[in-house]
Image 1 (cartoon, one colour):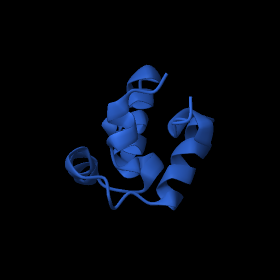
Image 2 (image 1 turned 90 degrees about the horizontal axis):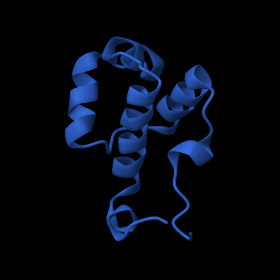
Image 3 (image 1 turned 45 degrees about the vertical axis):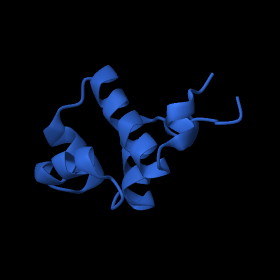
Amino acid sequence: MVTKSIRDAPLERVIWARIRYYQRVLQISDAQLSDYLCVCQKTLRSYDKNAENLNIGQLGSFLAQTELTVIDIIPNINQ
């Protein structure tokens, strides 16, 4: 079940939270994550505050590197 807070959150914030979640689960360092997203580590901290500049190319790169799927990252809010 998806909580109301996820439904109300901006999509880019939800996606970024899921990326950070899988970063911890897969034990990916900030250096590796920044390489996966083709950004500097400072940008990761910026995304922690506001992920509106996160783009589909970065998401695709992260998914390719981790072998996750879009379904893993974007929750189904209809459940």
